[in-house]
Image (cartoon, rainbow, N blue to C red; front, side, top):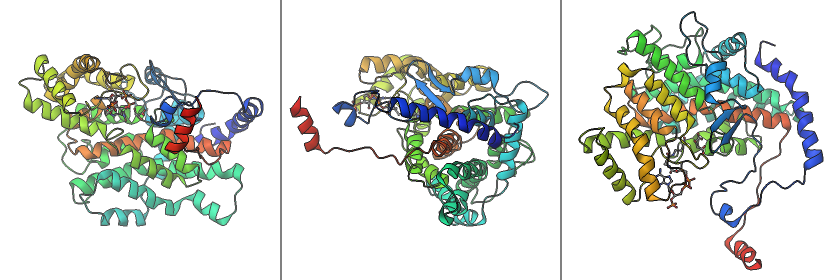
Length: 458
Ligand code: NMX
Ligand code: MLT
């Protein structure tokens, strides 16, 4: 089938039967032991969530339905054009996440068009709310408010209130909400950026004939086409590169298996049958934290500050000294370390490859030079420091500084773009949660006395 929903409908009976079979035969099979260390240590390593669309290996990193980033680059459709191959479309990866299948060009284009058609306008009441927000309100707070406001038009919420749908059909209305939500993100993102930079006046126009990432760029005013209303100083090649950076960035940030804070939160809140707008708005609140999505902004601040204090971004001794100064004042090196990964993040490598493919564009940017040098120097320092389990760069160590390079200077705003991308994985899972009819999530907690009692028994 050429459209996503019919493709899903065809997959559902087989997938439901598969899960039923597992539940029937293996209900009591033990997977892991839960330790006291894990209870008081952020549940690290507990394999306890069902998550279909992405998986994370400590050594090789993220896989989208079993495909590495490189395989996605090779196999997923990019924007249909006659010229050179562009970065794959996030719409392609959304299809892959939802179905487990690589879409054809036609399927990807249809989904792109469907999102553009659904995303033409924000609801009037959301526009009003966004207009009334203090213009200097934190961009992630604006995003969470904007998304939560849209639950007024949740189709799932309305049907549920009417009492007109049964459990087996929930997924269909959740699916409608999910596509509407993802489709609305370019407009909402553009509105937030115009609030913080242009007193709420539009910076660009939505173009129904263009892809999702293009529309994010044009609504930020950051293309050199007529769809951008301000005078952005890009030449053709920079404009095209920025759109491709957006496609790359929003394509690889879609998910990072189920346990990361934004994905897990979305799933947890959704398990109470809160609609996708409320569920993802909660995920966004988690993404706003400096140990999670806000790290990209912290990295940019860190790079700029370090460059002010060292004589050159190539001075290894001064860089090392700066890193030690940071660690000795009990601060983390932003953009390094990971709860699961034990190797350099392949998303970081993909961003670095983007830089390497454009030497003329980036060679004179001291922040990008420092970012690259840090990726060699920091692991050595962190290893010697001896605390961090993974001394290598994660994706945030490269992403923000590339946006900054192209003129996106509002650091707090970076996480909003992360939030656009992250919608795709957790909301795909939300659809499958309802297809599978998963129950409300409700782990058991223990107080210190209960923990001490367990300790005494051993
Ligand atoms: N710099 C300094 N110390 C670190 C770092 C770092 N980059 N990463 C971990 N540590 C410390 C950590 O604070 C902990 O110290 P303590 O025992 O005193 O509490 C110790 O090393 C062990 O932590 P880990 O088990 O290695 O890491 P954990 O799983 O707890 O946390 C992060 C993972 C990502 C939160 C952590 O590495 C970190 O804070 N990194 C910097 C922030 C960052 O880059 N976040 C981006 C995450 C990726 N994302 O896209 O969201
Ligand atoms: C993510 O993309 O969510 C981050 O790398 C954090 C994580 O996986 O926990």
